[in-house]
Image (tube, rainbow, N blue to C red; front, side, top):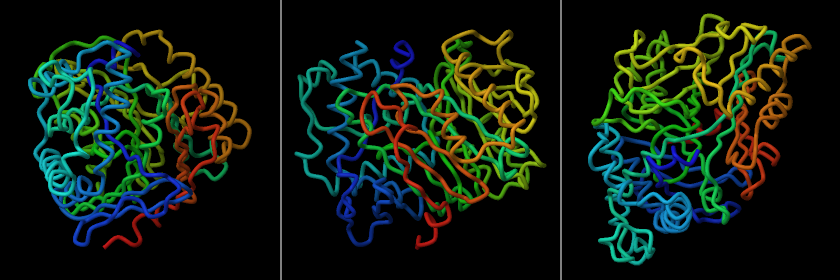
Length: 427
């Protein structure tokens, strides 16, 4: 994991007590508000990209410098030994933000500048770039760098048909990432709910931290889910500049599915239009009526435009000969189709565990929600920051966030959220 962390080390979050129902203060006129469900903070946003971004920047003033200092600089940069100036250089020289994402981030920064004090946005750290001389205010470039944070570990599966008790899809995933000993990254977790006046009117929820506008773990109101998984293999460097951050590419894929007749093709087309420089598996799940009887695919995605499939190879159920059912699909941190042969690495054992569990479930009445949680727990470890189980039959989303470093997320009590309720009371 260490070598892959170097590309992007910045994120932002919220220091608000997760059990405090008030959340950050809400100003009249902002297109956003903060709620809690089962202790999980929920940020609801609506309107144009600018309106949603501005509200987020205005609502979270304390959190950006707190996480930049305590998590990024004092933990990631210090522990992994990469100069923060290198991260900023990557942002300046290699990253191109899609126009809509750029407008949202610029508005977020405007909201922070207009609503936050200079003291709130000031950071002190010996790990800042040398020219900062140990202290400076957070900048827009820091915010952009946050959205380049896309080097993930993870495991996930979707099962349906004979592999679940209801026949409807269950999507379960672990998000594995570097967790600081102080737990700053964990305490900043929240569920963002978007009601976009752009992006085709898409309504979706993203489990993330304040400041990040892409998708790590996302589910739409239509029941479509997308989860990210980093790929460890070295890949052809056919893309060097103009790179779209992977979280933002993932968001473009999610919103492309909104109302699409062929949602797999729509998501694939969005990914093909997003230049990349590293590897990624994107696990897309959906209700059976949206997928011609299937419940999920995996997009094997990188920047190798000279590949016969383009940047994206679509892995469909039934491809994996070690899964004895075509009513499930599993995903970890290596390619099964885009690499020949598939690489052997630390994700292979996790994939084998998922295969065994899904094979057993398909022959024994199928997984229920608790069985899905138990299976995802079996492949969790001390770096599992959050986990989710989405039950399409009941439209219930269970969100598990690790309470502290060293405690895998799926071993904890979840926030249980009705997907419909997230969107019912939006303006």
